[in-house]
Length: 275
Image 1: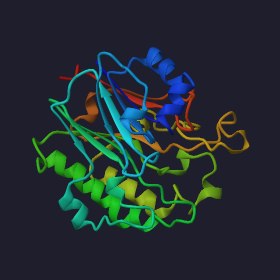
Image 2: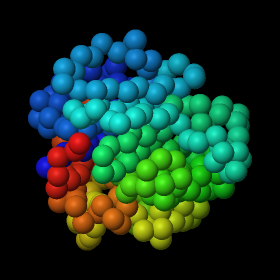
Image 3: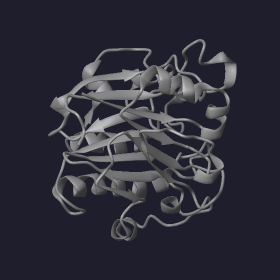
Image 4: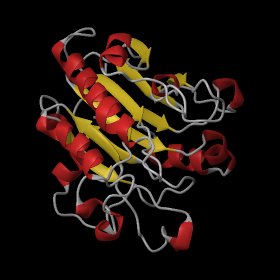
């Protein structure tokens, strides 16, 4: 069995300094851990995890975005970002915020039987100024990349496990106040359609497959109005799995009691040891 966790830490230095990262590791002992929004260069992070192979991918702009992966099993390879040909094909160009493919958002790790991809998806912003980037460039580019990994276009053809902060609540069940938030960033029709395209392509939302009717299951809470204590949240952090590997996933969970970030970890268990 292999335990895989994903967590948007909203600043890895802060979650370490609060003691919450150590508590998380002691409680869960993940075989693979993917982090998003690390907001740090590796040399800025005081962290020593014996027994783990690690890879950090930081944004060109310091203190912004960033991802990291820790694995007890050494991957066959690491990759940063999205392939240049896809960036060009989908015109994933720089905007007023910067170049989305230079923001430390995507890490890929190859294992013997699958590709692991973790992503910190660009936020569409409160004024929806990045919604066009999401709907017309990022989401279709990411889907093409995942399908390319499955098909053997970017290395050996293998199923994909895709995780991270995807910055969208897919269905009304995935947020506490869907009516009030319809059309707002994270719950626009365009973002929801972008997520649906993953499912239409055969990817499985592992948590929803395991818990089809579960309500009040959220992974992010605003800091305002005591939202977390009242569980007024959104489910925007996911593990998606290729159809070929989804039957090997034996559990999928949200760990809402883990503090330290405005997000909580999400996990899956795979029915085999990773090699």
